[in-house]
Length: 110
Image 1 (spheres, helix red, strand yellow):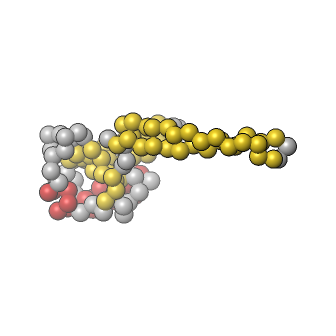
Image 2 (image 1 turned 30 degrees about the vertical axis):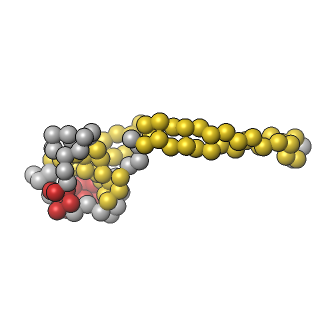
Image 3 (image 1 turned 60 degrees about the horizontal axis):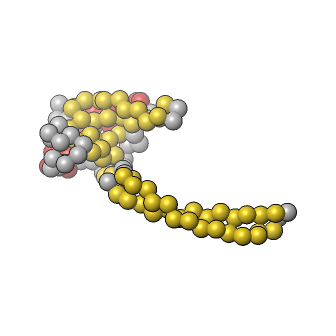
């Protein structure tokens, strides 16, 4: 997890004229950047066990990601939005489901 500083700028206007600008710094804790990588079979097979469960998104197929647990289990998931919530559809576990099959399934689901 990362910590991110965001700078906000507020302009106060009256009748189209800027009266004053104020700036403030907001620090976001536990900010998580989603990793993106071109998924390949050797990359997935040789990826080490993480300290926390992670998801790595595929750059070639939108919505496809590999989810790697702390025990080393690797599953293909399709990420999508339902309203404001991010949902996941599990395609299958690696290596039982091949990357090419997972990409085809993600293309069908999109």
